[in-house]
Amino acid sequence: MKTIWTTQCVLANEVSLYQQDWEHIVDGHPEMDGKEELVKRAIQKPIYIQEAGSLVSAAYVLPPDVNNPEGVRVIVGFQSELWPDGNRVGAVETGYPINAKAYPHPNLGQIIWPKTKAGAK
Image (cartoon, rainbow, N blue to C red; front, side, top):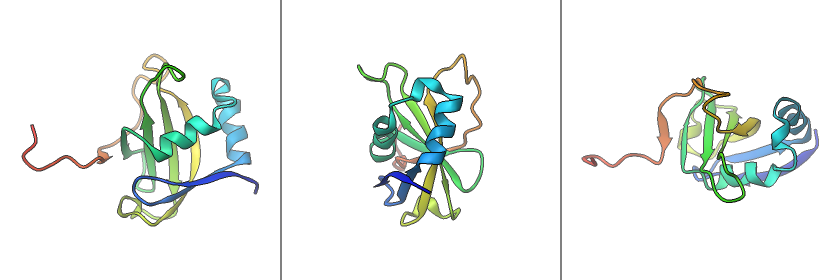
C-alpha cells in the first residue's frame, strides 16, 4: 500500500494516510481533492480530538480559516483502544468539511484532548 504521508499527532501517535484510503475519501467527498496537507494539519494541530464511534477511532478537528472556510474533521482508526495514551499506530479512514447540514448528528463521543483542567469553568 502506497503511503502519501506519515506524521505524529499531539498525543504522540503515528498516523499515516494511504493512497487507497485517500482515493476512497475523495470519491465520497470530492471537495477534499487536493487537500492532503489540510488533513495532515488536522492530525498535527487539531483544536480538539474526540472519540469517533468506536473505541479504536478518533476524530481530529481543525477549525475554519481563510483557506478552509468550513473546518475539517478527520477520522483515524487505530490498532489499539489505548490510542489516547499515545505511542500507537493509526491510519486516516475519512476526512470531510465540517458541515452541519450535511452531517447534522455525527456519531462522536467525548473530547479526549485537550483535557479539561480540574476546577475549570
